[in-house]
Length: 330
Image 1 (cartoon, rainbow, N blue to C red):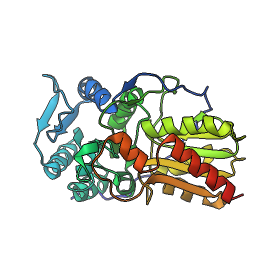
Image 2: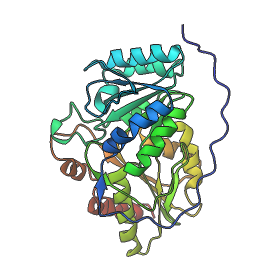
Image 3: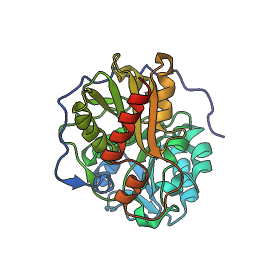
Image 4: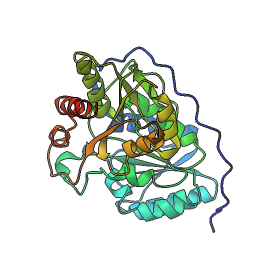
């Protein structure tokens, strides 16, 4: 039987980082999934992690890695990892994000989150990055479902560089984690500081509109929108949330500038129960008008770029929505 003793109360989340210089968007694009693939073998050996794959093609096993490929059997992968962890082994399970939160969700809930196992579930092809694979492979519900699980940290790196650091932090974390990765190349932010699990990052200072974003493509849009809003007389703050769960929501609320009059949340996921809902709930007492921007409903097959456009997650669309929102709520 799993140990269901309530965990000791954890220390309060660290104070948010001071705002660095505004990072630029590099001309290069790198894949968060590829960064994970390259970094995992060394980290898995160093931290003595059992790696369980579901035939994703995202893992390159080495001779000194403990590696099992169970095939397209996500439920079995979670159960196997949970059993190994019960006997003292940290474990990582690599899946497509769409299958983590559909086929394997009950197993993650009962075998991982409930007993608070030290297991990192890695979901690739997250959001709309599955593209032409269609709604069977799009994972836009994962943020809402995964951050509903108690004790589970939900992690979305800003870029390929952050992926390596956050992967190692997930492997050291004393409990369940879900690492959300894209599919192909995505924006890179060379000026972004080193991430710390649970600590939101102010990537652009501001004082009237807070743009709270998660994930590579969406952070790039938020930075571009903030630049455009300056032409309209606004000083928009941009906050990147790489830990998207209720435990981190209060920290995000403390990060938002006291002078901010409008909150805009941006995510490549369903807005119902996602990152924006967590943040808005945490700062509700401030009475700031909130505009959630994200995916609404199922998406058809298409390119990643076309699906973001259809969801209103492009610079032009977000800028228009924000200006309309600000005007209507003055």
